[in-house]
Image 1 (tube, helix red, strand yellow):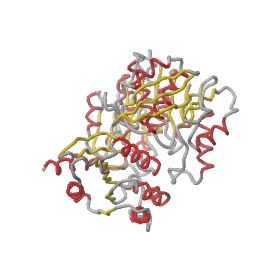
Image 2 (cartoon, rainbow, N blue to C red):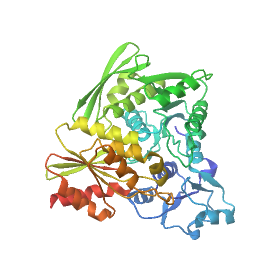
Image 3 (cartoon, rainbow, N blue to C red):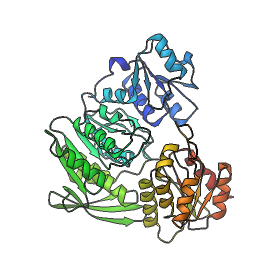
Image 4 (cartoon, rainbow, N blue to C red):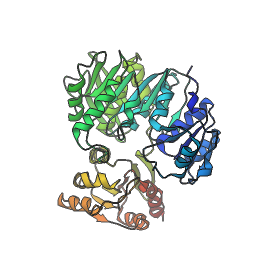
Length: 464
């Protein structure tokens, strides 16, 4: 039986309750019986789902939305100091709790698996949530994206396992005390919060140092940043280190990944025995995510062959190479990739899945700071496509940086030999892409912003 509600969380108010991370915590609290309230900038399916669980969701931000009897106000790092509900909380002396502390409180008393890394967290967390559910273990989980099957990013389960996506972007993953921690990769990102790779390594070392005594670190054996992290923490007292990957020295070795259209067949060597299972999404990097999930489950004592079979039930996460539909012989697929490594991995996965098709990409850069630091690499990744359309930068929580525009990416893409076009008016994109596409082509909408909304519009234009 899972624990109840922490006292501070009995009547929480979430600012930005519709966000991927915030909504998951709110859902779990509502399912546990808390009186949940909050606000968000606009209506959404997430807001409706929260209301269906009994939560009060206000649209827009106003001081009056915060009830005087609120037990706390939950915020993420994206909430600005001048938010009227945050100012009202100070007037009422209502405690302000960071999202990561709220999530950490929900994990107390449970066997936590925390999934970290610069890329692949959502997919790996989702694979674990699906597999453990399939095995009847009734896990709780909090994920940064909606599962394609259950269609939700979080749930309160009656079992004793809690699977959580652990966000390194603002160092919030340092708040958790997992029994098993997964580190998929370590790369420089989130440039507003990290000035160097040394800062990144220090942050991940702190995260690994929070593993409970006798717990396990599952870490990639092939990715350079993860290998360096392993060297730094290998002798950490009381922590078992399990490596996975294609390296001959990996504890869980990836023997072979065989593409099967939009799925893959994966064979691993574990304890000297071969084990083969299916991953229902294409691409080597997703296969490695599944192997990380397998290793984590085994670390909890779950039989490997049971886990392997259950992992085959995973059908994807929204926005992670999600097929949006097909029209006029053209498939439209959506990708959340926004870092160059993710972009290249998804583009290579699509190449492997459809070797005889043209690949057309609609890319929306995410954040000015990321574009400033990684724009050249983003442009180089786009050279893997047959043709690309690049939108203006999606600012999210950032203010513009002088001189930083999508032109940085476009220029780099052209230097790499890419066929790339800038489109500043996003309303022109669906028609332009539909005009480019031919039967048999794949269209990939890519980015962490609202580029995802263009997929259905492209399909509509293709239909017409």
